[in-house]
Length: 266
Image (cartoon, rainbow, N blue to C red; front, side, top):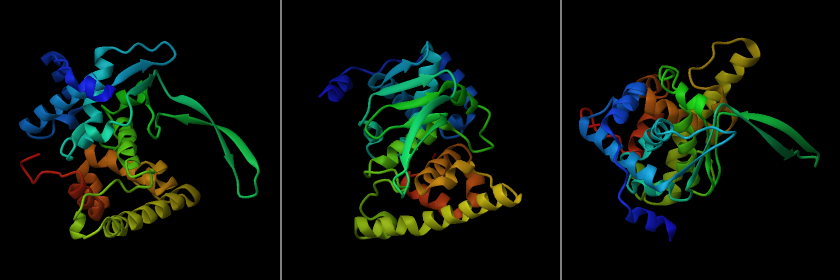
């Protein structure tokens, strides 16, 4: 109920100087049509209305921080039917000043419990909050060529999780890729994503173990299809041309899912 009550309130106006400063800091946001940039601004304002930001370890949430996250978070849903409803399973966004350390516990196939610490730039929890490192959010202003963007990565996970699990396949619309059923749509999706993932994983292993040339995408994408999807989404939204040169089929798959406008309309 609280979700629709929040949407009854008008979104906060984004001051022009703050918006222009955000576009200047993250140039990939502005690399689209004037209409698309204006829609991005409207969605960012609605996002700011609907979400609650919290600073960890004394970090202060300023207008700059909130707007930087909002503008990048809404980019993946800019043209998706439903818009911000893709993010309606959570409210909280926790910002750490830098990378966070999380304690993990796993049980191996023999039943032995292993505990370890993992350093995180961000984390998206199923039906829970999103955690981000402000240091890494800021890095998105200079890592476009590398295809790195922690905000898009975590919100891609949120989109993926709408299908029930972060397995690398988000919910697909009826008729996706010319298919007739949801099952066929998933088959069509993985017929493109799975070979791309396996190729990337193989090249990553060769680079790490035998000194081969490192792939362009973040090596973290080699850990699972779900992480590969998120890593590839980062690259898709900040440097599509480079992603397409490495994974042409994957870029076209994302074009169809994310409803990328035809040339000159984005």
